[in-house]
Image (cartoon, rainbow, N blue to C red; front, side, top):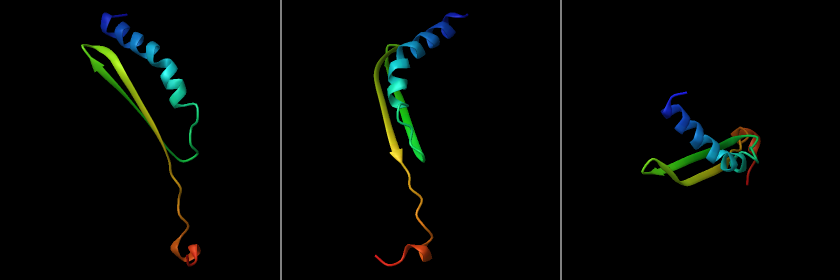
Length: 65
């Protein structure tokens, strides 16, 4: 394995606990975002978010609110 590939594998290994946290509650419909921030080629911050999407009924089926 090249040095670059090993570095990538090391980063993924280090991020594994955070990835498991982020994906521990997968929404039925929605998204999960995951961002990794680097400084001097080192991981310095991890950010993840989740959004739940809900499809609305057709306008005619919604009734009046």
